[in-house]
Image (cartoon, one colour):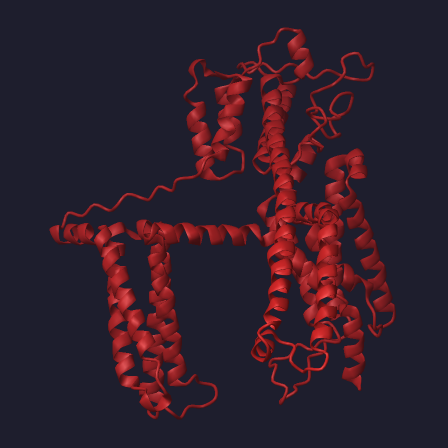
Length: 583
């Protein structure tokens, strides 16, 4: 899609087609050239309408560039409003919620084994929803999916739709689901096999561009690792047969017991581990890494090209309204955008506020009040820069006492002292893990109360030092404050429950947690609070941030694994489970 010319399909097409509505063929007998917009004080009503349309187009193109979306879509006024509404946060969240609901139906659909407890001794009867309940929820979700695919097809146009295999598959999956739903209703929910349950994970796949890219990369990687997988299978078969011959007359098939009988058996296990784990598995990992790295580079290049196309399209509709790129060059038109017009567009673009401020600040520095094409592209290099969070200014106090408190609790040594106290608290908690006969509840409760009071005082004084907004601007403070309030709440519950209602600490009703369990919960939170030291140690902070980024990057793989889990032969399992359940 990105290999096509800029604003593909915009020439010789009406404003309802995808592309840019102001690029038209002047020689066409049925075409009408849009008026050249003069941004002076004398505007006609028609010129104002076209000026608003071009600003709206530039806004959408910039938003497409920010989100790495394709610009091949309809650009008339009504379609742009629909396009922006479709990609709004509310609509995308509603679509994601609908997908979660339709996937979650598997937990309550008949036959279901979901009960309030997994204790096999109790064996509670699972809740069976009445016929039509889950089907009613599902048909609402299917209507949302039909609306979703209809809007997508309308926005991108028929030509783009024919090239999009995912949208075609989307329509097929929806059609099969609707037909299967109608069969279920006609059979009064008595069928044992439902096809639509097997294809529901497709809704999750098609809604995530990252998951589709990952799936495509896996598809390209499988042929490359097929030979390694064959070698691995041959390796397993060979060593399995050798092992069957070596241990034919012995019940010992595990590594350590075999080594105890004869040390020469270790050669077999060493060779198995070296060839399998350290050679073939590492070779497979290297091939997968090489394939994913190459695909990642292609994906990054595609994303960069999409962004540059979107920015260039926005520049074209702002610098040459009503003319088009070809005609402006032939007439010797100077391609540049007025700064005030660009600022008007940026005020309407939906993007992160700090990126918008950085781009506007850079645009206001241009002399002469105009921006050319290269400078227009460079303005959006701000999107690639890391955001440095600025903390709110500290409050100013007239009282010398508050100034002294502010100076002490905004110092780095106060954080170091808090880490030392958290370490001491963690050590005491670990040493308090004793048997039931050696537990001293009163001692543990007093120690926890002392530390919780210290944490509470530290939190309040930091709020005084930094101010409420300044305190919340630090993630460590949010983490500490949340755990402090949670510890205080649990400690109050312990005091109220066991001081006023249950004087005997060992006898409570089943609906109330035992005192030792509640204290253990407090101790777990105290140990968890000790993680506050991670940002203070640079090496640990780097490792932790790498792990967090790794988890973020594995979201696509997690989604594919979820789809694979739901695509397992669950329907056959449900059929067998259905028969056993009725039996």
